[in-house]
Amino acid sequence: MDHSSDRSATAPAKNMAGAKQVLASHKNWVSCEQCGQVQAIAKVWATSELLCSCCNQTLSFAQGAWREKAAALVITGAVLFVISNCFVFLGLEVGAFYHEANILSGVWALVHHDYIPLAILVFVTIFLFPLFELLALCYLVLPCYFGWRLPYQITVFRWFTKAAPWSMLEIFLLGVLVTSVKLGDMATIVLGVSMVSFFALVAVLGAAYWCIDKRALWAWLQPNNCFASKKGEVLYDCNVCHALVGETVLDAVGFCPRCDNQLHRRKPNSLQKTLAYTIAAALLYIPANALPIMSMSTLLGERSDTIFSGVVALVAHDLWGIAAVVFVASLVVPVAKLIVLIYLVWSVIRGDTRAMKERVWLYKITEWVGRWSMVDVFVVTLLTGLVQFGFLGSIAPGEALLPFAAVVILTMLAAHAFDPRLIWDAAGGQEKTFNLEIENQSRGAAV
Ligand SMILES: [Zn+2]
Ligand SMILES: [Zn+2]
Image 1 (cartoon, rainbow, N blue to C red):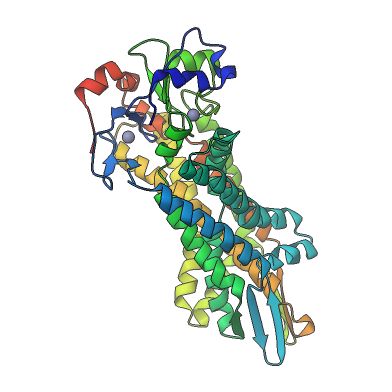
Image 2 (image 1 turned 30 degrees about the vertical axis):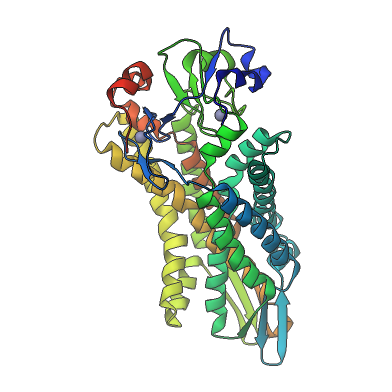
């Protein structure tokens, strides 16, 4: 691979205009996303895990020969995505009645019930973003395997990185499992071709994510990953491509010279934004739990369920496992997230220097787990799409569904707005640890 510094000419010219002199080079250094510590990457075995010397966060996974595997997985994923969206997903048999649905039937059912914002949210998270994700992977991984340079690959990779949390196929899969168990009691479920293909798609996409060496892919697109004006200046991490950008370059241009991502020393107004999203989510949590999340009308009458009464009904039917999943995902996780986010903001405002590693872990778990609360939204969407037997029985979404989805989205935004490096800033002198003249020599590699 060509790591010579003359590749700096390929960096976006627009970004360089503000800086007087940018020294672009390839460095085997990495800045920890969670604490900002810059350190050198040691030469290790192909499957070794590199940990941050400061906070134990995983820095990078060296995957060895990943290109072939990734290319095969991406092509398989694209084929499975087409199959998943073209055939019958689930069939439901009640006595002599049979109703079948494809993967997006629930979305159309939400439109039919005038839940347009929710229909858009579900459509975007289970179709549009996954489609973009797969197209982007095809546009990046296959050319990397064949050695083709194509236009706008850096832009595509930047958008791919930003869009990743909003693609929720694996959560939809959990929703499908919960729905199947819920309906298993009262009807016969017939697996469609799309459902089998969808299960495989989630597995293949997961494997592709695990296998792709993103740092190597960025290095293939643009080998230079360190942009500074002078030696020994404080370096900051680009949270998209993980290039190291010196403070003079950052102040002069405000963009990452490698991927064009907007850069800040710390996320701007991080605490205020986190707090605002958290308070809005906490307020919406009340109608989300007080109002019914879905209603079911049958020949025997109509029954509305809140999230909690839904869990109680599952327990009454001896479906303990599913009751636990819904209880944790829909009731425990949102409250725990709100408490953790308020605690993190409060601890940063106080300048707390205790248990910093633990707080970073708390943040990481909060960030990861938040999306999974969407499972209840998907379950109601699936039930609405499937259980449509006219006067015999049908399910409709309830008023709580919109505020509940808003709670999930707002807590995701709150976690995203929080800058975990603020936790470490309280320790004082943090800026010094960015200085490679000191750190690279004294601390060296963290393995
Ligand atoms: Zn760290
Ligand atoms: Zn970047």
